[in-house]
Length: 152
Image (cartoon, rainbow, N blue to C red; front, side, top):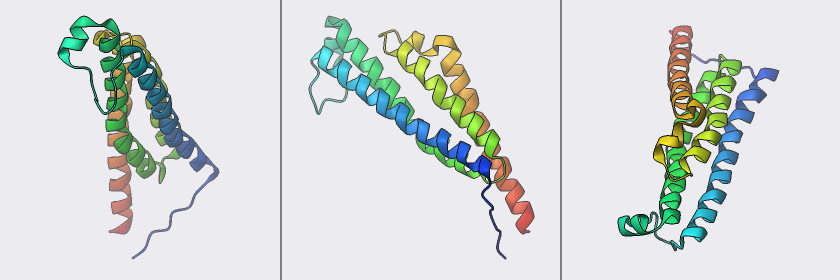
């Protein structure tokens, strides 16, 4: 048995949302590079050592900026795949959840990059991001249930 998937005009929106996550990651990588330079932490060292962080505000800012980027990289596969799955049946829901997740990565990164990890929830960004991520997990699961129902 086969299932046909018809792409409508609305399917461009989830694609734009997913690609926006790549641009967010690129922007974060630039911020990491700047923080690395300011801190004097050289490649291939991933993070500043604890002694460096204690001795240097810039080393701490580098670690926080690097962590914000790493956190985004950890989430992007799940966000992208769940967005694509959800978009099969619900493209506007998929685009909205993914787009909001990507948008709230900006204040998350700016806040975290101050060197104060508690500021990663600037404008509620950590909470909103988590809610959007959970929404994508639920929506993609529901989409798969719908598709399974159609094939059985």
